[in-house]
Length: 113
Length: 117
Image (cartoon, rainbow over all chains, first blue to last red; front, side, top):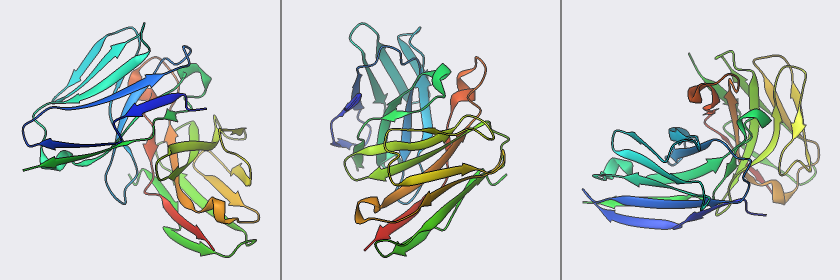
């Protein structure tokens, strides 16, 4: 059962454009929603995370928008750069339940010049 | 600080062989995790350990065993490897306590790429 659904599977954006990746979750007990960035041959690294008590969180060019009633959250990358080309994973967990992450299936982002 | 280290980086096994993947962290984290990553499926949790001496199954535990040897080390064992276990394996660690969001960040190792023929 896919508890976290992610789209699109792949995304091509022009340099300077906005990249948007969407995720939807099913388990209302989830209370921690991180986004991870992964470069080829490397392990995932935390990019930004949000708790359900806020609707938006911004760190530099990266913003998470969170819609609790719709059980959806999204990552926006502003002014996308070629160095942002990577695979992005959304995830969700219950912090009090061991923080076991359930991941989306990933989005391969390519930023073209 | 090395963070999370994993050995080996690459391994090829024949069906039925056994092996142990090693993981160590130097961040004094309480919780440790093993995930597998397969194309188109994201990362899936195999086992996790909330603290030294405790382990629990994740989403895909069949065919695997784990040992939390001490607070630093968490190993994953394949007793009888199968081609379906061909994957990239990641170990992660996290403080996973307290109120701050940063306490729940999971730090991942570089991965072990395993092929079972």
